[in-house]
Every structure is written in structure tokens, then in C-alpha cells.
Image 1 (cartoon, one colour):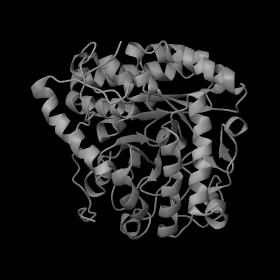
Image 2 (image 1 turned 90 degrees about the vertical axis):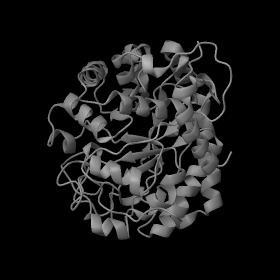
Image 3 (image 1 turned 30 degrees about the horizontal axis):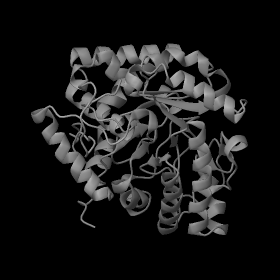
Amino acid sequence: MGVGWRRLAFTIAAILLPILGGCGSSRVASSNLSGKPALSIPSTSSSSTTQATSPSTTTCSVVADIGHWSDERLASQMLAISSEMGSLSRIEGAFRGGVGGVVLTGSASLAAPALKAELAKLESFSPDGIPPLVMADEEGGGIQVLSSLVGSMPWPRTMAQTISLAGVEALTHKIGTAMRSLGVTMDLAPVVDLDAGPGPSETNPDGSRSFSANPRIATEYAKAFEAGLEKAGVVPVLKHFPGLGGASGNTDFMAAHTLPFSSLVQSGLIPFEKLAPSAEVVMVSNASIPGLTNGVPSSMSSKAIGTLRKSIGFNGVIITDSLETVSISSYQPNISKAVVDAAGAGADLVMLASSNPNQMPVFLSARSALAQAIASGTLSRSKVEASVARILSLKGVSPGCVYY
């Protein structure tokens, strides 16, 4: 099904679902996996978004409308936490709690069969058979946590200089197929930032992670990278909106800002304009945007996320970069408050990834803060349900139907 028709069908289904009480899913969760308005600075209010649901309908075994889910369960689905691959059992409680995503970190200390078996065991604990999105950073070069298990790729810049577009698509299809065989369903790549400088480093987040400083080359290679993953059944993630090329520093290590918004319109936003409308997931950076967010990190800014939704025309899942970074703690030291602020700004899935070997306390605290914000009305329940609907649709589950 074409992307345009799928999005139209999603919109129609979203309108009819509350009226008809219908339910359906095009995929069972465990098996899942130009005309735009001119860019402008959006209003300060959070953007309203369309709830996406599966276009095809079937008879459901059990109807479990997310409108009847508890605040805590909705909150769990909006969180992605990290775990070292050798200690996944430490976050068993998050699987049981219905966490939305799990980011694999560390070195691949487990052999492929062991990692696959551990993921399958933990996913069996997921409520209603809805497992988390299992994510890994497989960009190429030095950013590949699974390279010993799935194979290696050159740095993106090297790919663009030495490999054809067809070659990149074939390479990511090979890597993606190996990822999917392990149970990894999402690649936190490709990077579509525009950069020609040295790095990555503490001062430059991109460097060789960028395909090119040329918007056309970066767009073409990112598209080929995406296509290979999609053919393998792995969801690609475009990052880091609105573009970190030329940023004042690396947000992992310091508070940083992008180029001015007026400059991004002429450069860094171009790959997102070309690719985001047909993408399923876009990651928003933790850098602030001069001329747009007034010092607020993009991942916590309704203006930045509103630009992605309204001006770029992106209707998929918005995931934040990890909020466990210096750029966020220097702006909002309370990580749970930062999570609520990111969700309030319009993020669907909030990432909490770090080298912390035990993320359960962070998960529980963030879930509690989100649930309390929903209960109090600080977070609009209807907008939270729209976010969860998008996440479930990405997993192949209609928000109006859950298979037990």
C-alpha cells in the first residue's frame, strides 16, 4: 500500500473509530513489525495531531479501547528506556508494565541466539501481547552496538563517498535482516544532519555520522538507507530534527543550540522536508533553536515539534533523543519533570537512555510523573491517547483492538 493512501486511510479510520466503535489490526503485535505549506514559526500552543489507526479492519478477539486504559498504562507506552544487552533481566518489570520501547546499549556480550531468546522471554511478559519496540543504534562506523552480531557498515560519510545508492540499500537490507532475526525492530538511524566537519566528538555531534553537508546527497543516501531497513522489516528513524549540522556543541555533554532557524530553513531542514512526510518515525534533538525555541531544547518545545507536524507535514511517531543528557539536565534537572514537559510539547515516545545499568527506578519515576500529569489534566488525555495510538499503529496494533 502506498504511503499516501495509508495515511489517508489512517485519517479516515481515526474519524470513524470513535463513532463506530470499530476495531482491527493489519498486523498482530508479536509479528510486526510538493504541496506542503511554507515553513514558519508556529504558535506557542501545542499542535493538535491526527490519531492514526490501522486502515484495515477485522473481527477482534477482544476489544480493549485505549480510552479505557489506566493513566499508568498509557504512560508506560510513551516511554522508551535503555538496557545493556547482557543485563536485560534488570528491566523485566518494565516489560511487564507495558513499556513502549527498549534501547539496547553496551557491547553485544550475548551470542545472537541468547540475545534473541532473552528478548523473546521478556516480551512474553508484555501486557496483552504488545511488546516494546526494540531499538538499536546501527548508523555505521563507530555507532553500531550490534556490529559483532549483524555485521558492520562504514561511517555514513564514507558510504556516500564510496558506495552507490543501490549498494547502501543492499547493505542496510542485509544488516536489517540480521537485526530483525534477533528481534530488533527499530534502527535509530539514519542521521540526516548536514555536516562536513570532523567528529563525532564532544564539540561536534555529527562529523562522519552525516552523509554529507550537501542536502541532496544527504537526502538521497538517507532514503536508500531507509529503504533497505524497511525491506528487512526494521523501522528506520530520521534524526536529529531540525538538524544538528553546525550545532554549537554535542548535547550529550553540554547545552547546545543549532544554527538559527532562518538558516535551517535554507539547509538543515531540507532533508526532513523531503523525507519526513513519508517516514514512520522522526527523532527530535535536545538542542535549542535560535529564533524559534528561545533556549528550550527542541525535544521539550511545542514550537519545534509544531514545526515538524504542521510545516513539515509529519504524521508519524515523534521520539525524543535521550533526555538523560547534560543538555536536558542543565535546562531541567528533574528528569521526571522533563519527561512530562516533552510529552506536553507533543512528543509521542520519550527516550530515557544512558549508561545506567539499572533503569527501572528512572522508568518508574517517569511513569508515575506522566500518569499524575494525565490524571490532573496537565497532560490532555485525548492527546496522550493520540500519541499511544500512533505508537500502537507503528507496532501493527489498532488502538481499538488488542489480541490476547
